[in-house]
Length: 81
Image (tube, rainbow, N blue to C red; front, side):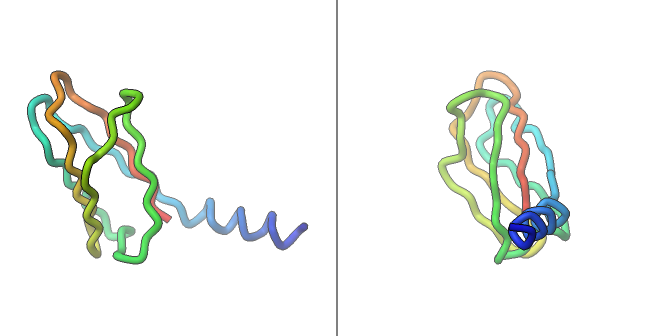
């Protein structure tokens, strides 16, 4: 059991939370950070329930999210592991 707790703690330490704002009327948001790699595990959160990207492209150093155009700004948080 201690090995599981240790591994969970290691994963938490390796997580990075990055934020961005999709401006009203726009459809694409790119977030750049050196912690993002093509092998990263990505979790995506928005501040509006049910609004999620239709397309996600991950490259070394950036993640690009495509959404339907929104009537108001959309807050986006990405967890990178």
